[in-house]
Image 1 (cartoon, rainbow, N blue to C red):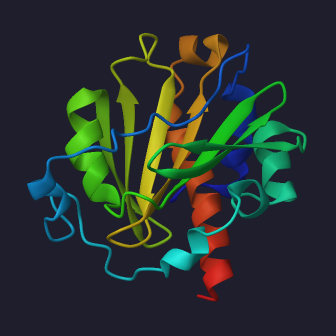
Image 2: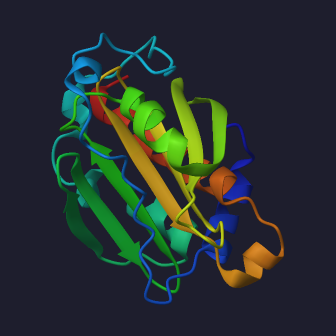
Length: 202
């Protein structure tokens, strides 16, 4: 993400748990058969010009998505990750402290950002196409179900068929200060993308 590194620390000040999860809003896994067989990318999604192998999203995101140093930057501490899964999509991890962040590896639908454009975009109140994050296309969006508009998901396509999501929740104080949850989620996504590039040796 094209943002000063020092400003990444602001993420820790704008997340809030309060019993809520920052798990990214998953796009519906089901799709018409004709769409599911469509060549990738489709539905307006951009092509990933320099993809990583899908194998970089194998394993547990609690172990590979964010380093301890990065978690300390985001949350101000290094909590234990809580693994989870999203049926039909892939594995995810939540980190909770006085703040919260979540990362999901979307590997099972084999649609990458195309599924996000097809399924999530029509259900959003905010849809934002970002400049490339570590060389990969990315979109940030807020679901209409987020009545307060304080939960943003950033989806990053690392290949035409696979992607990852980074999600966070703004605290009430930071929402009142008009902080941009998608901008902050994009900074977290940039950390994850950096780690995946390193895992791939690129």
